[in-house]
Length: 327
Image (cartoon, rainbow, N blue to C red; front, side, top):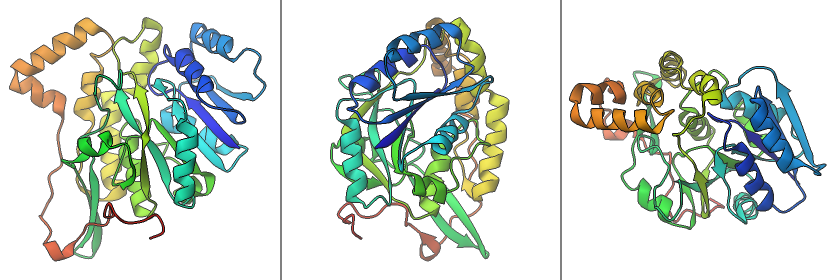
């Protein structure tokens, strides 16, 4: 058996459709845990309609908004099974997703975390959903202090289009499957974050020597805003506050002693305009025409203090593609 957690990421309006898809594409038995973090009534009613007649569902209700990691940790703490899958409410999983990801987990003897390929809008459009700034993690010692650097991977797009199963250096976290013991080993998910949760989890797994496995046979779909409905705006701005993003940036730099951190401040600023298609088109056009606005919406990047000599840099984040699961 597996516990599947269904949690809010940044909006609520897609939740009923995503939940219906999850139930249709996931064979029983499983335990479904839904976190209701002050979901507006009309979206709660839509989900209740989808769940009508099911007895394998429990709802954790909290009368305030929660950041995604807070909701996910509630699922982990209340899960009844050793296998835990977490699915965000704007992500649609395909048929066979759980079986394939569980097979990948078993291939690596449970000592990994498994993620699917992720597309925006539709797989046919070929729009991959991935953070191009997060490709791999490097770690070395500088003046007796362990430091880390986050680097892009130019080959990431090709890798995500490959439907094979493989170890990668870092990933998005809209959907994943893991053993409870692995999540507990890394100390659960960091609840201090308001953005860049995928950066932090990748760093946690890298630090713990836990492989990040991409199950390319599973291709999930994430629906990016706009639109964001008016009754979702309070939660959207709760999640995507530039002030909170700035604090999260500083927190992550200190937590991991990062020398090169791609800030999320610019992204959070862009999200303020993403609630409506017209405002989003306006911002994209303005950014394309104005270098100053482009800089404002890209945000600062912390540059390395020094470029470490080759012999001091440890590239241990991603094994060779032909490393077997038993290695």
